[in-house]
Length: 202
Image 1 (tube, rainbow, N blue to C red):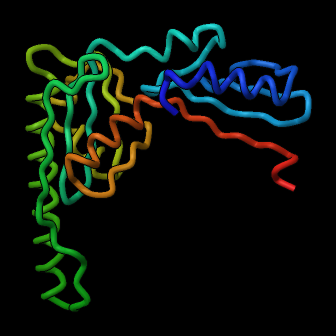
Image 2: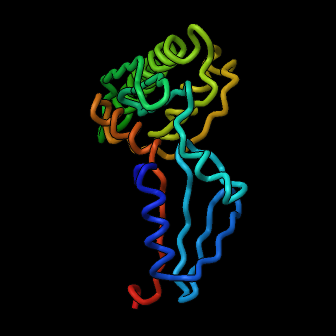
Image 3: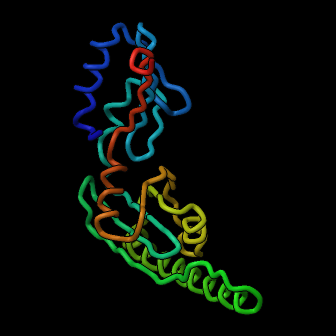
């Protein structure tokens, strides 16, 4: 949910399941109602919740942060000031699918795919370095997409020097597009809530 909806949502949860016990465990806020209903709440921007009282402060957007999304067939990068993207880049790359051929043809095909994937990762790292390190490194980087692709991109020499906390918050990235990037940014800014209500689950 959008951060501005949090207080109203919490008031409604408390009214339905009062009294509600509030605690934090492993960076997650836990709300447990008197009727057995409970909710797990994760703060936006991959921020851990160590103290329930700090959650309102954790909802505020960072002054400077970045998003990196990567797949074998493309990438998206954004640098943001608060909730506003100040620079974005989306790129699609052609990487062949798997071949059903056998023998030497399959080996050649696999080498071609590997070369195309490496070129895609190198292009993503180059663009990420421009947006995320210049003029100063972002103090926070959120990543998502395909984990092997992300690992390959972040292993680039320039990005290994990135001092920012890198938080894999599993941002969805179905395919490289500006729309997918903006959707991931909205996802990063939202409060994540998982609810278990025994009465509704029966």
